[in-house]
Image (cartoon, rainbow, N blue to C red; front, side, top):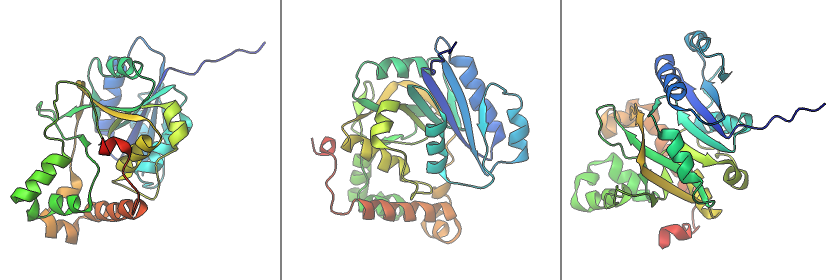
Length: 277
């Protein structure tokens, strides 16, 4: 007799890197607040430390996938896509803490429109202030304005306000160009048409690229401000100022290198119609 095992409705896939304390808080929030739905939890960990392996013993219901080296964010996420089984996926970083209705409200919203490919919740600091987590597509000068004093001049501020969608009515959901990769609620059917993240981006710009490909394939990317998560966001590439970070901060070089790859990839290609509407 064959027993048919139905896949879970939802896969919660956590991408982790060398911070077992935050990972524990993330997992505790998942099991505290996700209920009333069949779901699985995966942790795909990069450059796995012994302390993380020992901590995971406290969560035997979680599928733990370690890596002996730092493989980069897209590789972690793509492994989550392969290993998970859910109809929907909630791809989160280990520094995301769920709130009581995060998952149920995102799932409910996703099911209202079969053309939604990606949803992003509002991301907030632990003091209750909001983090930028949705944006318009980069222009080459966006990088310059964000990383130099030119961004403090009137024309630079205007451009950055445009990039950050400062005019956006935060009381209602809205289609956006791209959503920060730290918390992405995704439809598997859409992933199957778009494909995995581009592993040419070791860190940074992979979420921009992925959202752009979703739009190009006809899937919507939407920010839902009524649904929130807490995000312990370090902004590592911004530390040290422009010249200091260029000299000392390798995350700055990851960002600049990834931006160059992104602009070369789309050189001469039009933006998705959504952007021009």
